[in-house]
Image (tube, rainbow over all chains, first blue to last red; front, top):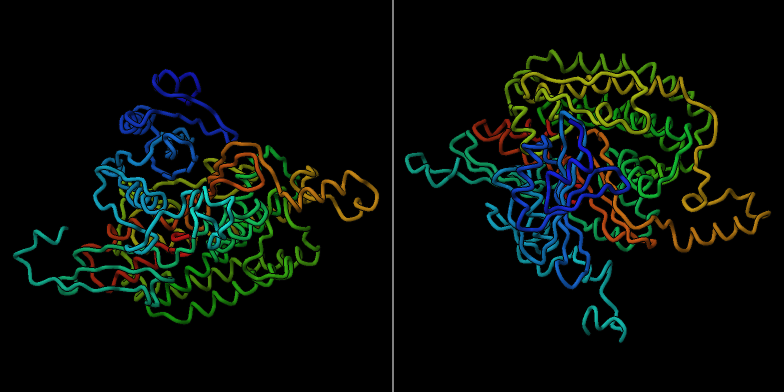
Length: 158
Length: 396
C-alpha cells in the first residue's frame, strides 16, 4: 500500500506530517514517541531498511537540535523521514537497528547529543580527548574567531 | 564474540592493523583480537581522515560546495557532484535540459567504470596479484584523460553543477568516448581471464567474509556489497533519476555474499555501465547543457553586453550565490559503493545551514566485524578490499 499523507497522519496521531520539496514524506513526532515511531515505520509501514541518521542545529532556545532519521521500503521503493527535536538527549535505536550504531556515535561526536542505551557511545570522527562539538552552529566556521565587539555575544572574547 | 567470556581460551593477542597499512585503502585502523590465526574480535576505528567537510559546507556558497563533494570520494567525483546537484535542483525546483541529463549519465557511468577498475586492481594487489593493477590502470588512465580533455582536471573535475554542466563536450571527445566504449568489453574480458578463474584468487576469496542479505540490510549496507548478498536493490532501477528508467541494463546480484561474489557483481556492473554509456552516446540529443534559470546558472557572456538584467543576474549570482528557498532535500543516487545522498538544509540564504552526506562507505564499514570475525587474519585484507571503502567519504 503506497504511503499517503492522510494515511501517515492517521498512523501517527501525535505526529505532524509534511511533504517537503524532495517528495519524501516526513513525520515529526515528540521525543517520547521516537522509539515507538521507529518500530511503527519499520514494521507497520514496512520501511524496514535503515538509511541515515543525522542532526540539524536549529539554534532555537528550546529543543535546539532536530534529529533526522531516514528509512527505505524495499517493497514500496520509497523513503520515509522521521524527525524529532531534542536539547541534549535522545533514546538510542541501535538495539533494534544495528546500522544506527555508528550514525548515533557520529551525531554524539559532532553535535553532543547523548543517545541513552547506546552500547558504545564514544567519539568516532574526532580524537577521544577533543573538546567541544564542531557541527554545532555556535562553533565558528573555518577559522579562529576574530575578536570583534559584535561577535562577543556569540563566541565570547578571546 | 566478547573477550570477557573466553577464559578457557589461550591468551588473546591484540593487534592494531593500520591506520598506516597498505591494504587499508587510506587510514582505517582495525583493533583485532586474535586467537592464533583466528580473528575473535574486530573493531574498526575510523576518523583519521576527518576533515570537517560538513562543517566547511556551512561557510561556502552552494556553488563552492560542489568543489567539496569531489574531494569526499576521489574515485567517484562526478557521482558526488551529481548527488549534490540533484538535491539542490530538488530544492530549487529547477529543470535540466535533456542533453545535460544524458551527458550526466554518460559521465557518471564512466566514473563508475573507473572506480570499479580501481577496485579490481587494488583487490588483486591486496591479495598478491600485481599484474591486474597495471592493466586496469591502463583503461582508467584513458577515462581520466577524457575528464582532462573535458574540464582540464583529471580527478576533481566539479563538472556537474546545480543547473546542468559547466560546458558542452566537444564532438571529438564524444567520438573518443564512443571508441573507448566499443573496446571496453574486450578489456573486461582480459581482466576476467586474469582473475575470475584464477585458482589462487578464488582460494583467497570464495567463502571468505560471507555477509547474509538480512545482516547487510540491518547494518545499512548498500550498493554492490548488498547486491552480492542477494538483495537486488539498485537505486538507478528502483528510484530512477536522470532518466535511468529509459536505459536498458541489468542489476547483477550474487548468491553467497562472499568476497568472490562482491568481485563478480562489480565486474558484471562494469559491463552494464558500458551498455549504459553506449546508449547514452547513441541517444544524445542536441541542445543546451545549462538551465536558462538565471537564478541558478549565470547568463552567457554575450548577453552581458546587451542586457542590463543579465548584468544584474550575473552580479547577484557571483556575489550572493544561489539562494534556494527554505527547506530540505535528499536525493539518493547509486554510487559505485552504494546509496549516496546529500541532505541539504536551506534557510533561504546563500549558504546552507546543514549539508550531510549519507556516505555508503561509512555504513558499509560497519559490516566489517561481521565479515572478519571467525575468519583467518590473512582474510581480513580480502574483506576490506571487497568492501571497496573510501576513507575520505567515510570520515568526511
